Image 1: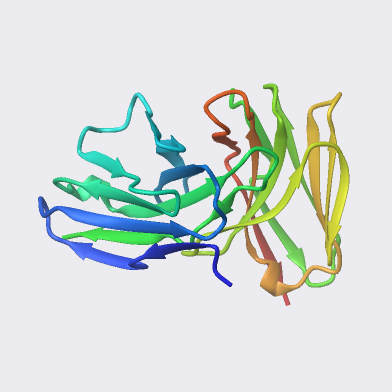
Image 2 (image 1 turned 90 degrees about the vertical axis):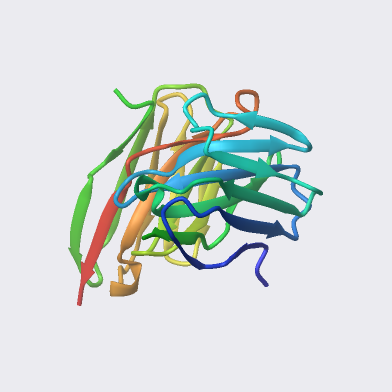
Length: 111
Length: 111
């Protein structure tokens, strides 16, 4: 049974057209992360939530926003996607003492 | 110098060979994760270690806290083991458990 679900798995958008990626979890973990992974690179943390507390990484562009309406769901909004934002976006969850669980990722293509 | 270093970066093996991937870290961590990522795919958590050794099927992971070193072993390797294996450190007290990733080891198992 999938524990971290990401939708859609593949997203194609046009340059500058806003896009929202979603993540849901059935683990009741209090921490949720959004990572950006470009080809052959390690995932890069964009931001994370500890419960409702939002933590933005210092180098995450303002173009990226996030919402967490409840424990189970977390959204990544890209307000004006550029060509450089094409990547795999990974959602992950964790709790102290628990493994980190990753979703399958959403591959974003920007035309 | 990265806080989490893996070796080798690339590894090619023949089916059936015993494989070892090494990970050294220079920061204090609460747990060490071994992750697997198939080409174009999401990330799967293989192990989370705080001490000692864990085994799952043909995979074995060990950690030496004093030496800040961990190894991932694959016995009787198979072509389906071909993937990138990533070592990541997690500190519960830091950025709420954000992962510090190694650069990954790309494993190719030939039939």
